[in-house]
Length: 455
Image (cartoon, rainbow, N blue to C red):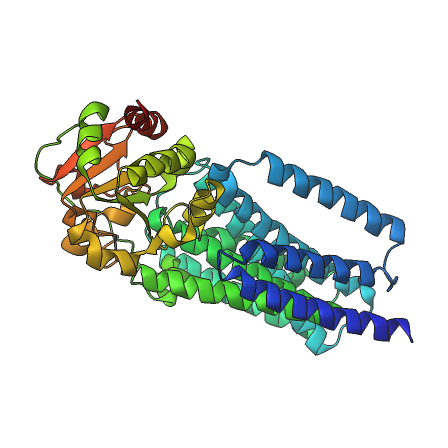
């Protein structure tokens, strides 16, 4: 059997592994096995590719695999759950950088046909946009850059000129694809600038959508790189990542009542600024009084957000939930599709604390039942429970479906202070009659209440 036949057969098995792994990732019960299966499929693909020694020696490939494995293990071990979104953003950027470099390097393989030149341009363009866009997303998520939308007068015109210049240089490069073409370097530079311009006008509650979108871009860039290298598995795996990313992005857009085009072309339109004016009085509560209310409750819903990840409160939340259940109370967790800083952030966080999957309720399932809930406990979530999304047409988040915690009989909001949420929008929920603010570190507050149950 020839090596080419072995490689293609292994590629088919790997592709099947990717598809089956993706399907298993769709359920919390099978997600870990799906992740392991996908990783195994990737290992098979890499190992078999080593048989096709055409570009560099085995020693370089094995050395790169070892270095990448060490970095991956360290990242998985050392990166905290709160910084997972930043790590995902960086990984997307690295994927874009790899596709850009593959497209660029392919030019040195000899004369490129028009089709190959087009695939090279696509690989460089999408890879460049993904690289710089992902690093801007990382800067916003890690608060190295302002998390709000960054806009300026004439932004749409500037972005339009960038797109026009990019397309012209791409066309000129395809007409004469050489390694010393000035249009090649123009495409690289403008693609990097365009990635920055696409992400800076996006901020706040839209960031999880951006992460998902950039993940899709990294898959499409890999798919283009697959055409450049004529590698079937890279085409298939890139297409799978690109398609799954865009499907997830679309789902999240629907969860925020926005169109995909609305997020894709944020840099080409004016950005709304908050006009929310809140009135009323804040009503604080302490842990002792909160305990007394919870002791009498028969139905409690936790609404987690990024603040729970920051305070690492998931384990004490599970402890408090166990006490409530032992007291005869029904406990559930309401998960908003864009809670946290990346898709599925809260699900992963609660899984880490071994919260039963059947207690996790999606927003559409829990909202009709909020009126019968005795106590809703909001932990570090702000934008996803903000009634301004349904009450204030001038709000930047107007139209975004939120978890209707204000319909519960009593609402506890755990916050360190009265700062606005990640979107920068004031939250009228805090001033409603049935809402009590429990100020302080969420983990310490929950621990104190759980301690009252244990005493």
